[in-house]
Image (tube, rainbow, N blue to C red; front, side):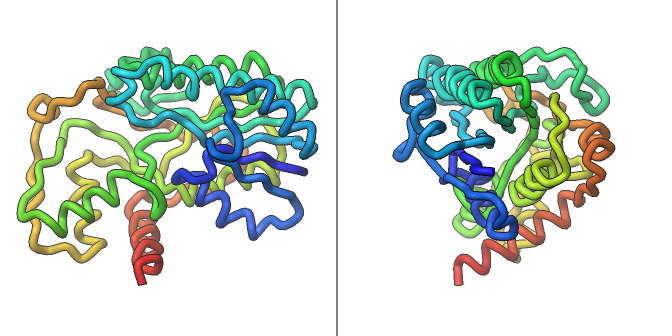
Amino acid sequence: MNILITGANGQLGNELKLLSKKYPAHSYFFTDVDELDITNEKAVYLFVMEHNIKMIINSAAYTSVDAAEDNPKACHAVNCDAPRVLASAMQNRNGFMIHISTDYVYDGKLNRPYVEEDKTNPQSVYGATKLAGEDNVIENCKKSIVIRTAWLYSAFGSNFMKSMIKLGKERDTLNVVYDHIGAPTYAGDLAQVIFDIIEKGFDTGIYHYSNEGVCSWYDFAVAIHREAGIKNCKVSPILSKDYKTKAKRPAFSVLNKAKIKETYHIEIPHWQDSLAKCIRELKKQEK
């Protein structure tokens, strides 16, 4: 197939680009905003037709959660309108689409891991636009899959892991919230699952994916420093009420992955193992 991958300069986009070399049977078209404006319906349709695209993996998103509160229009365009445009283009070609979504579609008030059928209730502009984007994909492309993920990080782009390493080298102390619970997700593992889906066959619907295990942001920060060899920065736990943010985050966003494991017969690595792997990759890049 000819596969279009949007958001190519982001965390997941870069991981997909790396992994695509292991799957040479397909032809890949990696684009970011400079190559293709995915909010422009005419441009998308033209690109899809000219390159005979049969699948779109949409990893593009407006992910500045706090900035989205002040820029709802821009966030809506990328997270809501663009998925509709991409899905419609694939439906027109009788093609396939994989769309990446987020745990922010939930309110984080549940006391057990979220399953795909649980009620959504986003608490932020970002979450609301991502949920609307999911609906647009499902409504406009019959052969579509939505993958909700959480706490994504990678050796590429900007993310919590890289911020903790940078700040850990610059500061003597750091305060990190410990009352928000979830599961970190290595973008390299998510990229592998996407290729597993492509290779094993397309079963439409909504799926959850994160690494196995559960932790707080504080636990994650401590583990990051341990793996990165940072010893001179003390990480202290604080309550989220003492760390003010413009957008409300889900306090509990652990995702139940049973559906994707059973459907595609995959084993999901524990977050600590994947963190160690990612930091090894980061160190290779820095050499």
